Length: 312
Image (tube, rainbow, N blue to C red):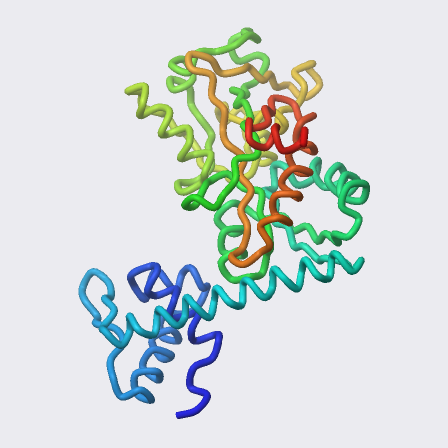
């Protein structure tokens, strides 16, 4: 029986307990559900007791499963604490700290050189590796321990830190109606819109704003990515909504005009997420550098908490 519990199996079991079902845990772990079920079956065979009760709406932990979960959480917490202490020790000794950062595509290109320069000046002990990843993908990278930090658009529980809010603009062709000033949200929903596919943070944010106002969107086309949506607008397929920093200048060279949305003004949140176990002090310091790096972006307002940290 010795050796039947390892860190991988404990992590798998903890994910099942936290998500309440094998299918949800398999998605979070990016693992095939049959493989996850196999690990559970092997554990139950070796232990000689059931650790899960399968039900039509998920799973419930047995008494043995609850006991195993307590140990899994305790061991995970100890590992997280050890990692944080070793990271701080290495940093205090002048060692380098390698950080894997996932950034949403709409920010990655502009943010990378600014952030690298800021970290080299303020946190030279940090070696940064930046990956471009959408919000959902970055969440998976954090859950799997393949990224340390992620700049993305949705909060998951209470661990994500609000870095900034970004004003949204309505983007259409200059010849559309000749208007160039701010546009009421109620006028936008009557236009043929080109938005990301269902499940995208931007799509969800705009849909929620419409629902709150009792309005219905006219979505003519689903296109992911700010660049492809801009091209679709230029081709006359409809209009779109973009963050301020993604907007091309409305000087006629692009054939597009960006109009700030009003009544209400829409500001989407930009969050910093961290993988479980990362040193909170390190997360806070890098978050402050990130907030300062975003400060100069068009239409970006730094969150009060992040703003206060940048002044400390």
